[in-house]
Figure 1 (cartoon, helix red, strand yellow):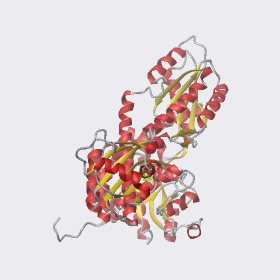
Figure 2 (figure 1 turned 45 degrees about the horizontal axis):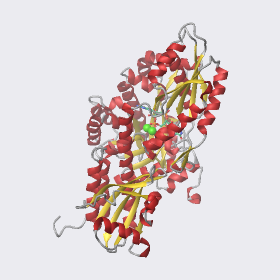
Figure 3 (figure 1 turned 30 degrees about the horizontal axis):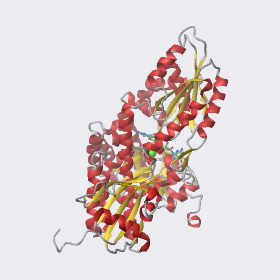
Figure 4 (figure 1 turned 120 degrees about the vertical axis):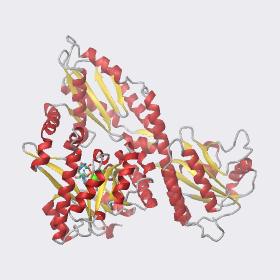
Length: 620
Ligand code: C2E
Ligand code: CA
Ligand code: CA
């Protein structure tokens, strides 16, 4: 930097640091952390910076990065691992702190001063310590030491909070990657049977001549992933182990308990069992699982969905039985979780639906039984409509109005996703252009969902640009939504396509944000405009503090990247008010409006706003 250049602003430093952290992977995180510390030391004009992670299992704090790197480090290094049990007040603070703290030279921090002196041989210091917080857990601390006194402004401390929220994300990402590696060669976390031994066991039980029916209880822990992502894999593993232990404790009449994957368990009772008895057993087991689990002093509960199926020896195969149990658990899950459901023939109709869809989808796209509904996106402060999202439905002759989730997956699997996507885009653009020609909807954005397959299809950008210009729509008022998972899966192609869309002037949003943590590292390289917070985090806002922590982290992230933020699935007033209180005012959800047909949307757009049935000003 030349002597005359203006110093960088705090905002620009935060943004540049955020950008580096976003791109960090498990492999680069240590190096990137150190670079970030170096940047911050230079900017804040302090002498030393350090990053430490908490290890709550041994109540210790571990040094992860420091700047400048000390020379002549004593052996053992008094700063490497610090146990909270014998820590001075300053260190003790970083075990559970939730907000940044500043310690200036005074008598009460003497022990801390002494520790620094031992480690570094320098006198009196001041310290700013900003905790890394993930969910409800303090996972580490970012510290800045100034030899001598230094004041920290509120603005600087706010910046530290934004940076530590990113550092906590990096930490969670590293843990998640480690967990993936771990799971690749361990499936004995719980000491339970694994899939292979379950299959072999069921093959025997289902052999002709064996006593039956053989009951199978398929457990799926609801939303376990959030524990893993935000409390770390150690917490998630511990949780599973506790639950497995509980299942085993109940195991008098249970022959096999197997863990199939992350959060899926199968229980097979020893005795032949009818559906009613199996259901009673499921209720008993669920009650045991529902009891709270303590993790590092945090009390967590997770509910479980349970699917039950019966197999007849000599008649049903192992894969029949597991498929039915799986279908039953899917039904239980989609009924809202924490449910128990017994497989019925009706569920197997769902399998038939798939065949039906496969057979008819092609002609459906051509013959007009697809329709679009629209979901408004609203400024919750005013009720003003800011955007509308097109959602496809299939008016099926005998099955009624089918949700996209029931047929989009099938369309993708039989290579019809492109065709379906083009239909949606053309139809939505035609309708949108029609409204505009009648004078409504000029200030709103049309949001279109894009299936992952479309995104990696050759010529996708040209197709989009072609359709938009065919209907004379300005590209800026069209936004394509891509799900976070696709961003994770095929980042290279996605990056090229997104860049092409931006060149064409179209907006891009990341949908279901928060469900695939790895996308964070790619945000930087994807020129997206908007993040949509997945509705699983929004649904229980106002009652689940873990969800609030996640949403706040996403809000901080969007702010530091200058991205628009939209909350999906606002169903309750509590969620709406919580979002507003934390600075997220764009939202969609059943509290505001259900998806509505095109004609109804046109009249709604003519009014320009929806009536809010909760009062913002009174409650904030
Ligand atoms: P999405 O993109 O997350 O769309 C929002 C979904 O959430 C819609 O479901 C909407 O009805 C629902 N929703 C909105 N507010 C609430 C709420 O407060 N509570 C609850 N429980 N749900 C709410 P829908 O229409 O069934 O669509 C489901 C998914 O299907 C969409 O999720 C999207 O991923 C996909 N989809 C819909 N239309 C299309 C399309 O044209 N193309 C592609 N590729 N995917 C589509
Ligand atoms: Ca969407
Ligand atoms: Ca979504």
